[in-house]
Image (cartoon, rainbow, N blue to C red; front, top):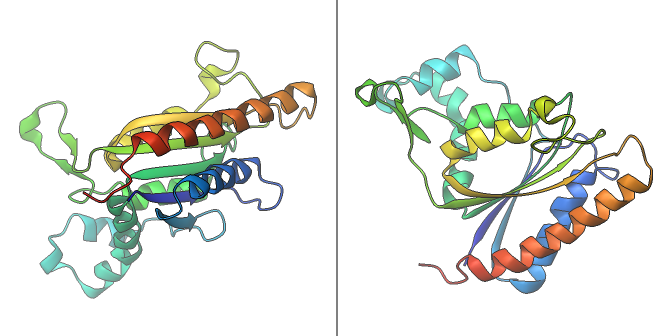
Length: 220
């Protein structure tokens, strides 16, 4: 079976468009593949802590040499990384805040992209010393924004610090395939917004149909 990490980052709940897209994907998946495992992680509601000096020291200290304080600082990181390791598919639903990711999502990224856990660092590799330790995962990235024109080549593409950032760090989560769906024009609330919502919903439905066929349904 497939295990899905359903990650939600919006500070909003009932009015969140990104949450709506994520729920639509998961509901559609469950209808087609009810035996698959869904692991919810709502960092919008319960943000992970920011990394600390003890966290950094612990991450760069061999496990057997860590102090109790360092072990405590890394406990949440270990839990969050375990969810990433175990999943086949990451469904990440997030709004764009100030042209980037919400602080809660950045805190999650900082907790899970960790030396000697999700990547290794070796200067013998020359000018490219980082290498991911995970591979073969798929990400569905579902976003919403108040403005519009953030796709490559469009009006505000240079202001999109959300999707490119997540595409970059996803390499260190073992992601080798990314699919996106985005809602725009939220602050305008006009026909363009309604069309954007409908297109994103259609895109989500299409991804459910596509990925339920391509991802394994039987444990290896």
